[in-house]
Length: 124
Image 1 (cartoon, rainbow, N blue to C red):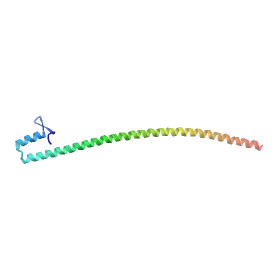
Image 2 (image 1 turned 180 degrees about the vertical axis):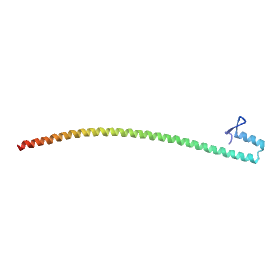
Image 3 (image 1 turned 120 degrees about the horizontal axis):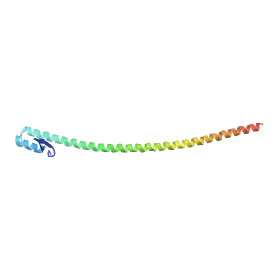
Image 4 (image 1 turned 90 degrees about the horizontal axis):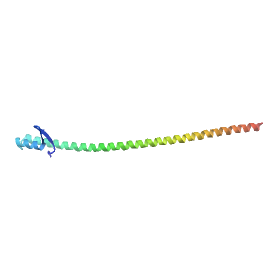
């Protein structure tokens, strides 16, 4: 379990397992301090493994979150573009409506003027 961890002892790289084996050879495998140290190192390695898994899970979550943000932003951009197109179409239709209403107003004005002229002629 301790094989992957590397420490530097006197300028050389050794694994924690190698260092523990060396300490056990010097102090004895049954030495209370050596057993306590091995237990502490084992707990430390387990905690580091758990933290590593948590970091990996969090990194995967971040990637998924970033992808969701990207998709959301793309959808927002598409929605905004559609809204702009809809607004432009609405503006075109309103301008056409305004032109038709102006033409209708002019026709009504001419009709009223014509009716007024007709009434004056008939009154004479």
